Image (tube, rainbow, N blue to C red; front, side):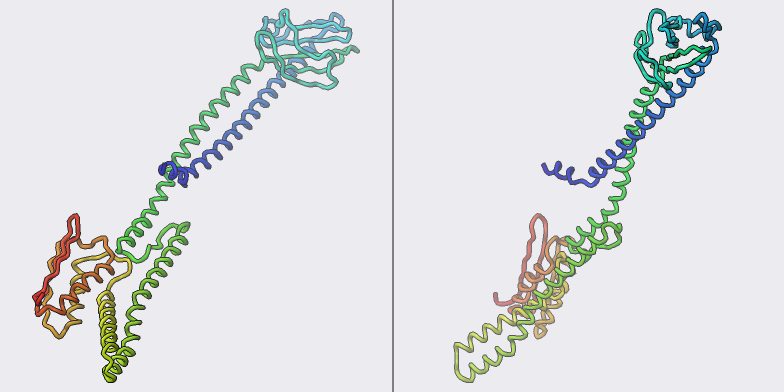
Length: 377
């Protein structure tokens, strides 16, 4: 189901269908025009020959005998040769070529006023082009209809048309193949975007490179602005706790002193608890202050920096923090969350430890985190 949906939404498929359809329509139109031009050219060429043969028949006519007295090309004497003529006189008599044998040309009952031509069926399935015109010789009016079998010409044109259709289909398929290769080659430039997005998700980058095709650069820029806004929102949310703790620290000190002065035990205890909570949040903000929003946890570097921060927070003690790390360089866990977790554990251990703390972190199919100190337990 999902693969079908992906195919329906594929730009490559959409471009292939659109381009293929347009190319096929254009090529078929060009083939149709070429076939029409070829047909008309063949007919005009045949008509020029028919006109010349009609002139030869006219010059060979003996009007007293109503017959052709001079020889014509042998093709007009060969039976059913595909070349025929018929002379129709005003008195209704007809003179036909020997090639017609016992057949008749399909002509109108009344000769046309102007020369004209048409296509008509002929003997033995022939396809005749017939040209007819009126003449006058020695005071007598008559018409000459002369015909030629153009079936071979039309068959050749149709043969050419089918060859053109096959060649057009092959050309469309070749163009679509080349277009598909060009599209895929162009889309490979978008692989850098996918790699950058993966790097952002893994915390290795903070933004996507804008060295991309111009068509997708606005999308990349909008995405980078979204990332920046999200990170700023996360930082503001994280810093708000520390700022609030700083803001409440001075008023709580005044409440605590006032409670001591007035002998208000409950007020003093609650103020002290609130102050401890604030101190905890301030330490937490300092511990996680090195973390980058959305960045992955790199145990070796992050835990070393965290250990130095905890030692600085508890500088009154000569603390030694030993790290035993057996893990990849980076783990697909949020750096901020892991620093908060390990920082709280280290800070608690530093409160009770005398001199030494040992942190052990291992990864296989699961994450194992162990913390030991030399305090009272």
